[in-house]
Image (tube, rainbow, N blue to C red; front, side, top):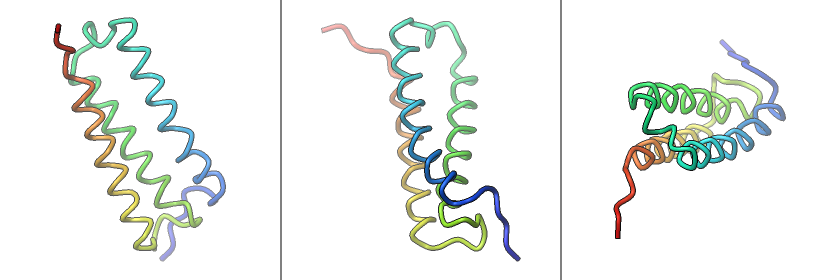
Length: 97
């Protein structure tokens, strides 16, 4: 059984561009202080959805979601973990020094 989400070059390009867009979004949310007005649950749900999409894209880089290569799976797990860390850090309010 083979599951194909999208072709490999498209998945590769999106998996490289989307994290940059996510970081830009985080910076703009912090700059405009919108992160204080929107619930943390909504942000958490957004990060979870983003992490799942990014994981699927990384697994699809070789052109197939399933069966995947072990290197793709390891990369996807690392990226998912880093996105989880970014989510946790984004909830921390800066301290006054």
